[in-house]
Each structure stands twice: as C-alpha cells, then as structure tokens.
Length: 263
Image (tube, rainbow, N blue to C red; front, side, top):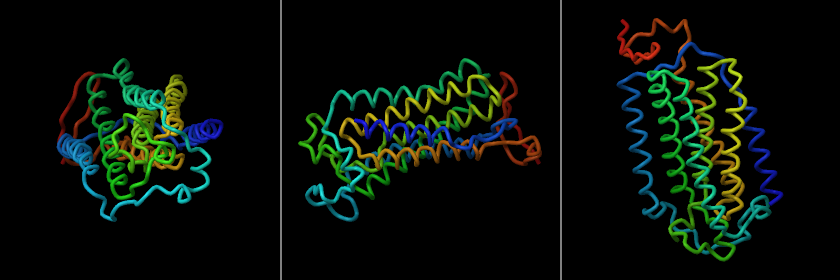
C-alpha cells in the first residue's frame, strides 16, 4: 500500500503543476458545430463500449505470464478487493458530479456553455480510452492473483488504460481549467482544485489497490484524461481581441443566451 500511496502523491503533484490558462473574457461555443461535436462524442463513447465484444485485431493474449509484467507494476500488484473496486466507482461518479457546483454561481447561459465543453471533454476521453483498451489488451492484476469473484470475465484483458482514471482526470482537469478561465483570482480556485484532483487521485489509487489496474494503467489514463480536459476548453477560449470572429456563435450575457451571426 505504501507504493500505491506514493503513486497517488506523484499524480497529485503532477496535476497541481499543470500550467493553468490566464483569464479569458469568455468561453465560446458554436451551436451547430459544437452541438454536432458533442452529439458525435456521446455517440462515439456509447458505440465504443461495444468494442469489448469484438476480438482484438492482433489475436488473443495467450496465457497470463507474470514474467511479462514490468518491475514497477509487479511491485504494486494486489489481489482483488470488491470493497475498493466499489469505492473507486462511487468516487468516479462523485468526481464527475463535482463541477455541478458551478450551477450555484453561474448564470444559466454560462452553465449551458460550460456543460457543452465539459461534455465534449468527457465523451472524447471516454471513447478514446475504449479504443485503446481494444487495440492494446492487457490482463488485469487480479488475473495473476487468483481472479476476481463477481467480475465479468470479459473484463480480464481490459486493463490498459484505466477507464476510471481517464474519466476522473478528464472531469477534474476540465472543471479546473474552466474555473481558471471564468473566475480568475477566485479565492475558491485552490480549494476547488485540491478537492477535484484529490478525488481523482484517490479514485486512481483505489483502482490499483483493488487489483483492477496496474500503476502504469492509471498513469496512462490520468495523462489521457488530463489532455482532453485541458485542451478542449482551450479550443473554446475567446479573448477580447477575438470579438470580431465571423460565423454563427452561441454567447452568454448574464442570464440570456444569444445566437449571433457575425460577418
């Protein structure tokens, strides 16, 4: 457990070291393109779940061989724990719901904009991690430690990358990045960041301690999720000098939502 705790500390420090963007006047979404993008991301996330039923293109993995596991992952290889598995799933959904606190401080229009951007980041990250699981099958740690009663056997080779880590780090990073843009200088930014990443890191650590994932699985998932959570909001960032952007756009002004076309 000491190694798992060390992994958690490293993930937490790296998360807080992310170069957060400076203040932006607003976040901009296009009602047509971003609406289609969000719908496409949600559809891709749903369809990617079906990949687990399709044989991998490279053939089967063969029998599990502990000798093929690298030294770092062997050092933190745990037997299956249903309690920690369940706890990590509860934490995952709690982390996803954390940005809902924005509803308490945002105007309705701003919350819609944030929701579209947040949804894009999560859905893209979710779909990509499922594709990687399909293309890069890997036995879970519990396979080498007596199995996991109650876990579907189709999950046995779905270790890399960690889906829980991908989703929670995408959620935490998107939430914190949006917060940094919309509320520059807020005294609540540091507490919100610590809480968001604290839950994400704890979720990833529980995935290792529960025997569901190796350390490298959660590190890869954290990197993947953080990339989407950071880059997607940046693509919607609008500076004051960008006010002359042409095209159809969805803008927020207080409680109002405006659809504007600039030419």
